[in-house]
Image 1 (cartoon, rainbow, N blue to C red):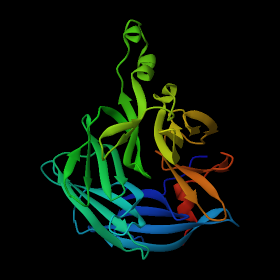
Image 2 (image 1 turned 45 degrees about the vertical axis):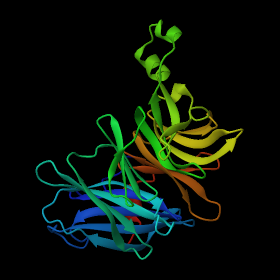
Image 3 (image 1 turned 45 degrees about the horizontal axis):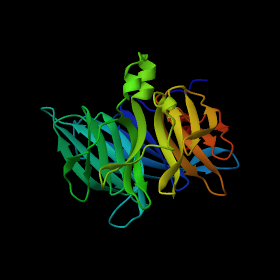
Image 4 (image 1 turned 180 degrees about the horizontal axis):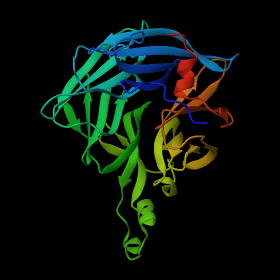
Length: 334
């Protein structure tokens, strides 16, 4: 059953798992109680908690932030949960884009405190629009791709810098203990002379010519290109979430989950697929681990259609067949 759209055309929405809650960010022109939109954009947040008895999400609290940009063209770019270098506390962040005149784009990074108050943490301008590979990392640090190069900017320096290395895409970026900030992505590899004498198909070439690598942002070098994801999956994996890491005999071993173009959620253990869940909707675009307490761990998968579903971490089974954005909101009292 297809869910109805939860938001009107003048509202945007994103979901984020945080401390056993689902945060629903909504960017709109006016208050929710207003019948007509106003010129002043407002960013709203709703904290939703999972009720084990009814097995639905209910609203706990709300907050808002007024963006003083009248007649602006604002867009939510992404949200994440990362630590602030000032305190080390893990807090939610959201990035908003403002399309200004003369091809100038302004970006805001807002931090959400436990009191539901937003803080403007970082703002900068670019002469182009960020479209690909956008991430928010610990610091906070923003990572994105323009043309064929990845760039980043941190709240500590406030300056844009580029990432060395020939990455075609980055599926995950974050901090690993004792390794610092790392990137996991596809890196182009040189084919051997024997492989170059063959006539591979396009799909074969995509497998042979790319490899998943873990790259250190601090040392700017590849840390590992084995025990991650088999090359056969390089053309179908679209999103990765690292669950655990360890170093054995000086070799990095990783446990992770991945979304694929075949609408699957797959668990990998040291480069070997362990569990597969066929997802109920098409075009999955993001996955997050959520702990609702009492040992209840599940993965929340978001889809391009604004649908979402939950998968139990323990047995890789669907928690709910239809766990949609509109259903989340319909169980909240506004």
